[in-house]
Length: 248
Ligand SMILES: CSCCC(=O)C(=O)COP(=O)(O)O
Ligand SMILES: [Mg+2]
Image 1: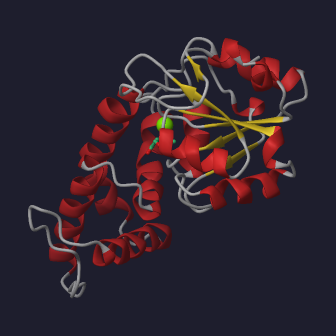
Image 2: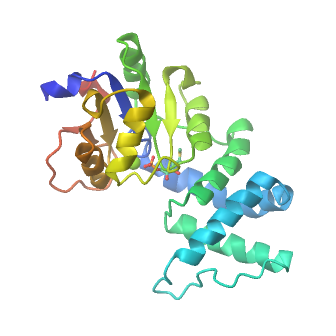
């Protein structure tokens, strides 16, 4: 375990690592689904929303049909706006139900969550040890970064509106799937370059073993997060931590 205290920067996953999985699946995703129609009605002509939707439609068109025969989006007719809107809503709901990580979906979710955070309906829980660990790392000169499938906007919102207050001053940067797939080693190489550290000087903490393997392949130090509510961990070669206290 000693090498896990020997690093210059920390890279953290969110869901299952800093934040309980249930907040994402039982609060954030249902909120986005509940507000989706209303949000699209109000923001349909927003160019940013249209960009998210076009990215999403392109993703849907590339995906193979699922076993329930869901249409892929090929031949989408966008000329009938109302029909297109309801088709898009149905597909987005399906994508959220199936925990798809498309960047267009994640970007749209972030936009929808913004009003929920701002009007007080959403407040992000963190595991108890997280705020103190962020402070300790920063005091020791180890900057902390986030790498999540949630969009950078969604990440900033989550750390602005936590139950412990605004913690964004503890974070030095944010990465999402625009940097690359979290299960591919190149994404971690890119992050190392962007933060100006050798991969071996970065500690990545995640609950997902494929992400852990990818970061390890890129040369990062890795700890696997075992938190209440996470899926059962299968056997793996990485140190498993139940609190960031083991890392500070
Ligand atoms: C940024 S909060 C929303 C989390 C989310 O949408 C998600 O898909 C969680 O992914 P993670 O990579 O943090 O496990
Ligand atoms: Mg996770």
